[in-house]
Structure formats: structure tokens, C-alpha cells
Image (cartoon, rainbow, N blue to C red):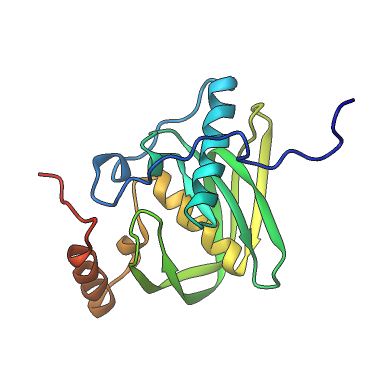
Length: 184
């Protein structure tokens, strides 16, 4: 008899190490996905498994060393509504509303957090595992997540959005981290 239980995202995935900041794959724009096949399904499963294992709310493919435009999320908004999904070939269409500072961290920058200004609303267009078009709108913390993960796929991290003393302090914390080994 077939199970009627919904499959838990990531339950069949492999947990990968998260690539630390300063690795070249994190600083380059990711390539679009062109094959919607079992390899893409496996990548999404692995992203979920890795995100959950590292207690994240979002994870981009380049954070596990895969330079493709894919990210997953399991993130609440400011009303504590859970948003669970994935986006293939996402593009940030709109980021507007109020600019809100909020503490932000990143699995590729463990232990480094900083108040980062983001838009309170974001709309991202992409595709699902079959190639069907999706458009996701988020507000509050979920909008922050959508912007953060899209930034990763464009070759950026939240540190790039910091200025002045906040940026200096975050970079100093990064350089003092045990995981930091700059690429020569």
C-alpha cells in the first residue's frame, strides 16, 4: 500500500559541507539551469538536507559548490507563516516597500552577523523542478531571505550590502574566524 504521507524535503538528500566565504564559487554569478532532470531533483534534495543539517532558512546551490541558479528555503515571514520551496533560475523582479535594517547571517559566514538593510517586500520569478514558471512574493523576514539567496546566485553575500563601521566590524570578525582561509 502506498504511503499517503507527504515526502519531507531533504529526507532523501545528502548533507554537503557549506562552502566558506572567499571561495571563488561564491563570488561568481551562477549559470542558468538548462536540464530539468533527475540531477536537478537530486541537487534540490541535497540543498534541503544541507540547509536543515546546518539550521538555515535558505541555501543557494553555490554554497555547496554547485554554480547553478537554484536555491531552497524554509523560512517564516514576520507573521510566522512558514514558506517552504525551491526556485530554479530565480530573478529578483521587485524589491520595494520600506527599507528595514535587520540582523542577517549566512551559513557560508558562520558566526558572523550584522544589521543589514533590505527591502521589506520582494518578488522573485523562477521555475520549479519541471520548468514550470513560479512567482514568489515575500514580505518581512521572508523577503529578506529571497533577496539574500538571490544575491548568492549573483555572486554576492550580505557583507557586500554593509557600509562604514558595520562593514569594517563584520570583515574583522570574518578574518578572525577559524574557518577563514583567503584564496590566494
